[in-house]
Length: 243
Image (cartoon, rainbow, N blue to C red; front, side, top):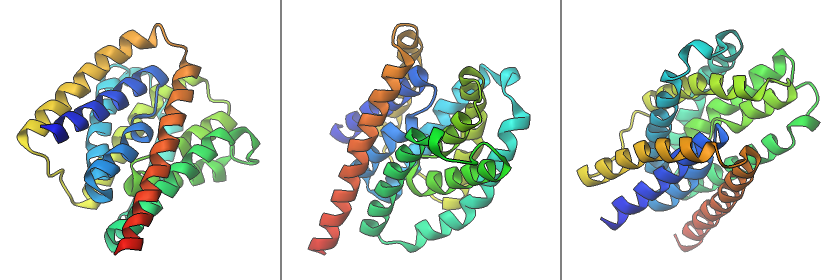
């Protein structure tokens, strides 16, 4: 029950964050889930409930998604997921932890420095952002920041981008789960608690989004993700040192 409560708390935090900031489930939830469940199961669980969060949001904005802009990015991500999944299967636990933690920090750095990256707003930048997002999602459960960087550089209107990102996240999470070929090894109690947390997060997040400055939500998301990414790297390093 302690593990179930921890998973529920992480999913609740990630789901709420995504509702407040528009993105961020993977950034917030994935590092903590990796610490709790290990790098393999942690990323799979993050993708499952990240998919659930994005799907709920997507169903409410189906007609508002800018498919012409987001589908080419999703296509690049899908292609890149294949080698990313093969790499994930070939790495031992500690090495995967370190790599996943580094990818979280790299993703954060890219999103923060997006305006300074030249050429990111052009087609090569679009393809690179999509491919990077696909690899990061299947390896570390954080497929959003690279695409966010492209959106910032391309001056994609924030509301339209966030709406379109839900379609992207649904596609990328589904393909990542299929390519990983794994299912979460959660108990019935853990599934029930996590699903309830996902639903509660959608409600709490919708309420909080009307009262919390999105910028403050993004700062909190970045802070939590940074701490989580560092913790995952340290954990992997300790496991290597004591192996």
